[in-house]
Image 1 (tube, helix red, strand yellow):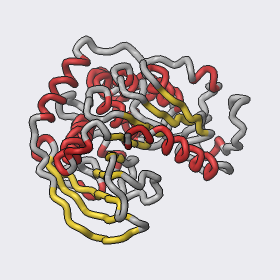
Image 2 (cartoon, one colour):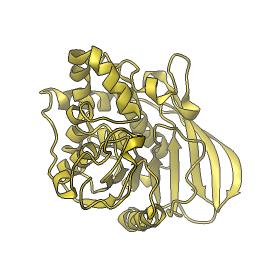
Image 3 (tube, helix red, strand yellow):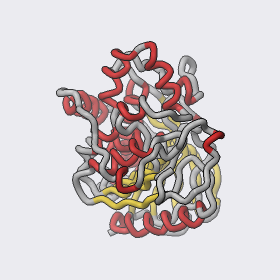
Length: 327
């Protein structure tokens, strides 16, 4: 265990070291892997196609005052005529000055995040395709299987559809609130952190982004390091389909996408994580080329003593980081 990580972890619980022997100094040197020559063209084509889709958002009120928020369920259309559902929160008493898209982890989402400090914002919580409110026959909502859906085809892999769900979320939010153009932010944790990095690389309508313990960074490392979670499922599939899996995953590497992100970014990366290997997280942060801010978590996907304190500190940082969206 690195000297700069003082969390006591029972490694027998995992049968591996969830810090992987990396010090913080070493984590800050991890760079992105080699990229396919047509990486830009692959994603730009998809983004332009997504921009041409009318999301047809519709909302219905489900709570007139929940912790100071009006809460709506929302539905909009994404690519491949995929219906996406989620929640929309509007401030009950404040003027709407900015908007946010907030993604979720691979466990899905059961409700909005009422603790967010953005009291002058319209906040959209989409459920990515195949998960939570956006389940559909033929797609498993279990992370173990969801992450493998069409993993044999770069153009059909479900992670690409989830990226497009973010782009159409921006389209839906701006259709409902066109005055928020130039005032949108994105927040994503774990699964939504990696999906967010892939989406924000091309998205010009979102001004600032935050990703927390983001997954899908540096697939060659992710495939090599022991892990729990969806990455373990991919590793097991990879053992029997190495060539094809690598061929597809290189287009879905969040560290490669991060090299294209031009907006200011705030990242929370963990020094220890049994589900999202820290070198993959830091590869995303390290390759961001522009303004970037890092909050270093003691651990991700793991309960630890000062977790609540760090979560509070992180919220305070995000409140400051996103304040310019209201201007």
